[in-house]
Image 1 (cartoon, helix red, strand yellow):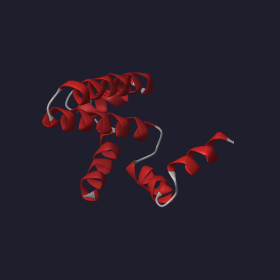
Image 2 (tube, one colour):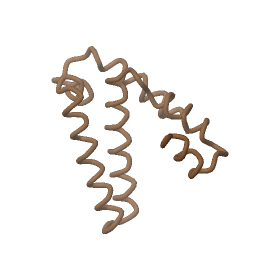
Image 3 (tube, one colour):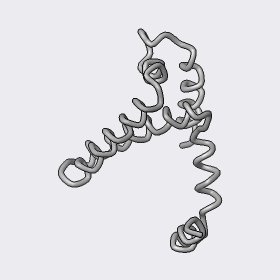
Image 4 (cartoon, helix red, strand yellow):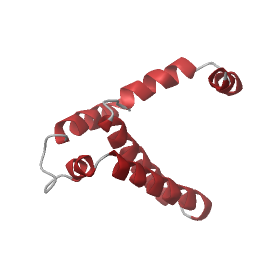
Amino acid sequence: MNDILKKLNLILKDRKDKSSEKSYVASLYNKGLNHACDKIEEESNELINALKNESDERIVSEAADLWFHSLVSLSMKNLSSDDILVELEKRFGVSGHDEKNSRDT
């Protein structure tokens, strides 16, 4: 399943230097991090609405949009899904309460 994340990571790296006329990802890079963060907020709100009111298909579609725009934004900071997976792996087997408390101190 992580193959799609690897492919997406490669595409995100490749599109940083491409023309925004033909690439949506390149257009996001050109508009900058603030715009990308606005897209995350927009997609988050759409996902919340879908979770409350819409079909499973729509929920999955909105979740994919949120993941995608999050990954684009991470790429702008030279991070990738690999970094997130490493963090999740570190948390695996740790109580969510314990993990949260370790951040609060």
